[in-house]
Length: 416
Ligand SMILES: [Fe+2]
Ligand SMILES: [Fe+2]
Image (cartoon, rainbow, N blue to C red; front, top):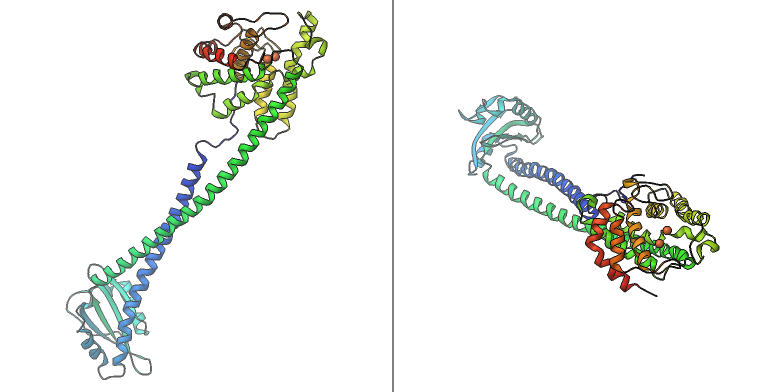
């Protein structure tokens, strides 16, 4: 059986960072698209509004004799009108500058210009941008009856107009951006609140699970003749050993946060199978006969099966899978001579290898009906002697770095 990296939550990295970036990206895209559309619509609207003032002005000469010329006389007072032209109602040029866009050779000779001229002849106000020159505006001069009498064209210096438009565009862009920032803050706030509530619920669930595990492990403790506090101490040694392993390059990758948490939580369940062992064997004072020993060893299978059944009821990988591997394999030995499956080396799940060392240390330090309690130094020596035979050699090396913590734990959590 290979060790597996126990990942309950497949999401890598901080979920808060990932989703806030996602919200930021969505808001940024929406803001930019809205901004670009608004700015473009605004520019067209502003230019059309500006040009429509000329159309309004042209109505003052409606019906006058030589109305087009009269209108041009009015336009001549406008400093930004650079040049003017007049066409008849049939589109023939009456008056135009010799050079420039209005000469009839410039933009008005191109497709856009031709279309604009056709539109103006139908009575529509037309605007044609003349790159680097300004704006050409074609204003139909109408009779009282509304027929087109002529077309007045003007080339306007649009520098000031563009400046005005730019200012309005910047104001709109800044407003849209501010709305975007506010929207982001609002969405992030909503997400943060939901995330915190969900985290609180998940924490409660986890704590409930931990308590249930504790209650279950106490069952085996109730019936076992092991010394008081064995389960708590085994859990604490497991944590100390895992803290050491986490710093070693070999185990750092396998031991993710969830896997470590699951091993620590599940450690007290290692002997849960003992609830199924007959009292005559479990509570026997003195050495067990070979047959009794065989039955006693069945606690690993009983515990493993019990937890496997529970784990299989869940449609997702849970901490129970780790608990199962610990219960089933905490008596395996590195050299393959352990039980129940005779697994060897790294075939023994890492969780079981860790708990096995913790369990043995505590058993060595404790008095049992058939043995005396060893000192810390003796327990450390015996574990070292088991390097590569009973225990994972790498684990024993890490144990050598944290063994003083084991002694502390034994002294602190010694209940008898
Ligand atoms: Fe056991
Ligand atoms: Fe134990």
